[in-house]
Length: 213
Image (cartoon, rainbow, N blue to C red; front, side, top):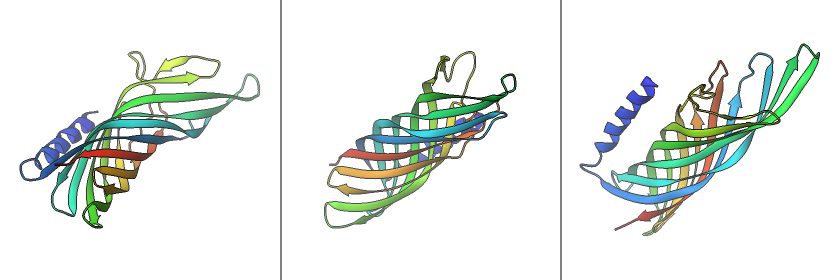
């Protein structure tokens, strides 16, 4: 947590330093999340996960450094999760017991990427982007079949780490004030708690409306 907060401060200073000498373009951005988790086996438990569909929406900011280069950031509300099939060997019964569960989490996402754009005329531009992201878990539920529904980040016990970070890559096209893009967030943090190891990744398809002068 302390490392995440330090990184947050560094990124904030990095962003604000652009405001004094770059043009800022703001916009509203939203789209679909195809979220998934990679679980490592834990003891006698085996996990298989299936991606779930969520969404993201928020404010986009782009700091124009030139006609080609820019830095893009923003703050987004983002729904993620996974469907989980769990199998465990129970010695008392001498057999495996399996059950299904589903995680649904809400995060605040903060990405920062460097964009390289190629104009194709006066109103069309294609671009590629790469950078990093920080995520903060706000709330979430873990629905376990035939058992219980648990708060993922409760006062009693955390089932996942609340902070996530990683690398993000994307590409898109801008047509006048409309931006259509796809990106992939590769989670690099181990967000598993209680000795469970797990990473999270998200494929995003987005559309944004830019407030151009």
